[in-house]
Image 1 (cartoon, rainbow, N blue to C red):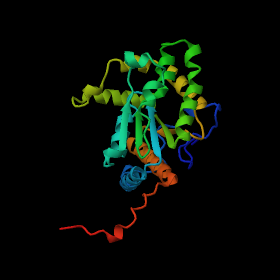
Image 2: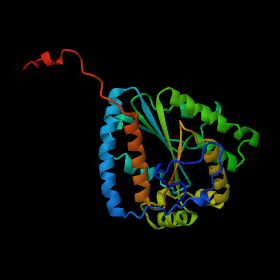
Image 3: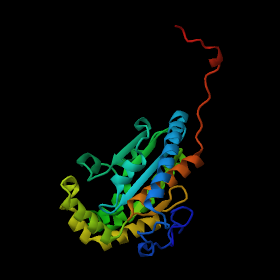
Image 4: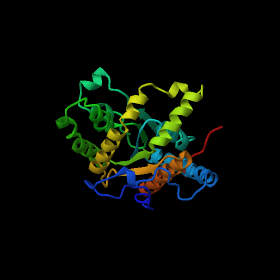
Length: 273
């Protein structure tokens, strides 16, 4: 299946190449089964815990993980599942909703830059600066002449982060419209999940095609070597989690963090009674 190659799930087209989400199968799962995927995920999470500890101790690099998806796409679920057990001291999660009056008084990247992970940390964005070329575009919140320039600003912002030691991973959790309907129905029918259902989700669903156009545009315009997009088939939650965990672990291994050397003379230290 196009895009779901052993790169792994990294978007293969280069900057400016056309992306058609209809060519990417949200049901794809490599013929794996849930049981075997869950076992592999357990091992990956153990590796992630170890790598995160070394990254934090080293304090020289950082990792930014960005999640974007349509409503019910699984952003909350994948963050909870993949980072479960990781030391919260070294992970910071930021969720970006409608901007406040103070945030609107600044440039659109101001509120996001404040949450960029410091050295030694993993930063996780549940939605992100890409909302300013998604919801803003679809709902005509600013003129086209404004949001159209934001792709370049976003690329420059991410390049700045990368130049300062931040590795960037961006995941688009790709679900089908039919799968979204099933998940919305499930929320309505489960009293414990009804709090997650918002009437505002329905008008957004009606704009599905417009959002697909907006996602394709940002995938085309903002897929770079220093901040690549990954299109994750997400109809199967267990497969979604596995893909994300694999990609994060592989990236941290490539970053190759190291424990700092111990202080000189530790071999002579005697702990007093």
